[in-house]
Image (tube, rainbow, N blue to C red; front, side, top):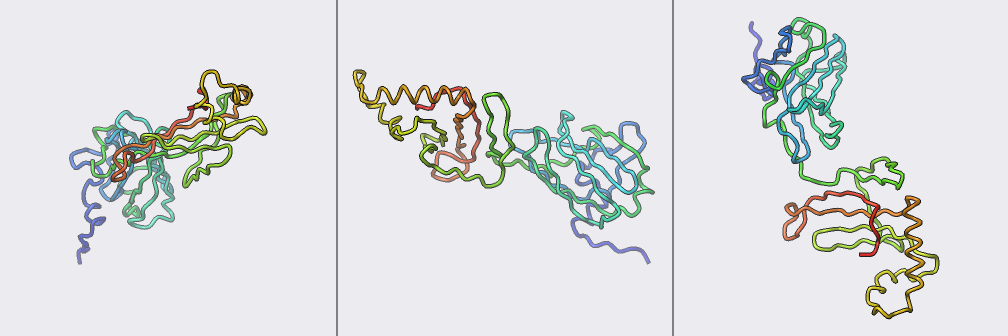
Length: 266
């Protein structure tokens, strides 16, 4: 009795090229192997907006027990690498893709079909492909909204801290100032002399040129900031808010950068 097939999405994909484009050959550069229809049955890859929207399977490594897939963008730059233990794989099992390098903010899911007969379909070895022969369908790649993917602190010596990801809460306090001005959220870490008025940095703006009551604290604070900058202890970060994400607000997603080479006074 012939095997019956359920026309479910993944079963249907195992009988066609998807997630590859229908008109690509899926043949490696040496003409030694063709990727079977049933190997990859689904793919969703979310990439930062503004990056390439054309991706392909750059390299496939098959050893019998393990399968490694390397995804790349149209320039050939590696985007993500996935290694699967086929001894524990089950049909239509999905795996998480994590971006790397310039695509560290990219994430995705890749689903492998039935690999029980892969030895008969694909000789063991390492195979390289090109964009023209193994490009993925356009619908498998989705742009992500622009946002801050991580925060890091860069010292005066150029040393960079580990990246902070997930929910990062910014707490205003005596030495941390948060202000929102015309679509920007400004974060300032402030160094001031012990015993100085914590608000003198704002008050000094209103002094007339001949004023002298806050001249000495300002001078001391300036020296403090210069010394702190030399020691890598002053950080000024500007988080730019994009303009399309939140209704009735001038800002949307967040893009950020850090710099230390400017003074703290606005």
